[in-house]
Image (cartoon, rainbow, N blue to C red):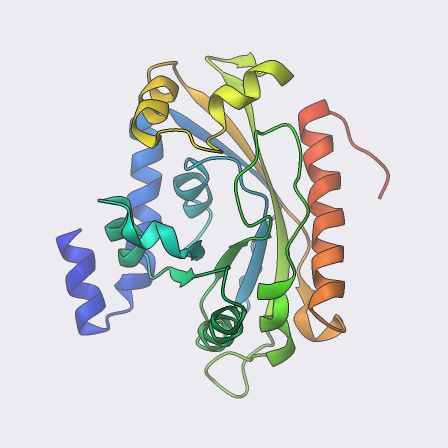
Length: 247
């Protein structure tokens, strides 16, 4: 944490990459086995649109590549968690105030323009792990900026969907009635939930990445939200039912 703080203060490129290695180590330490299907677009900035199940999503998704998150403003007040979020260069959003949401959409677009990969939990909150909640379109207005990488000759930003699913606990399939035990939602206490999950044994999580789509190819935030929700929902159903569906 001290090294990451120093990298941030000095503006070193390692400030983007260090959390990636840190979370890979954390997942190995905690017995979280991450299985990735699909590939993150390596050519330019990516807006990653994901469902949200648990606090475990943060370390699991961070193993894919150097990324930052869009987090609700309350996270910035949580002891220790807020420090980790700030060290990973998270964007904090107060979703109850529309003007601030628009300002933050501009910040997300600017971060994409700088070449960052940003994860947006489009449901606005975490679920019980058995369903995908409706996606909120307000922050998708970042797409209207059609940002390029910091180099004007760089590639356009793209969007990729992510479906994250917790599939096995101690090597055994997690059934429908067991998924809420892994999910963290509602008014659950984080510390007690973390203890119960981590003492249960090794946990397998599957992350499916959709194909990259140029942000400029989608007309507006509502079209982007609808497209992302449909794709994430399809991928999630395929993962929890262990079978593929026709597109």
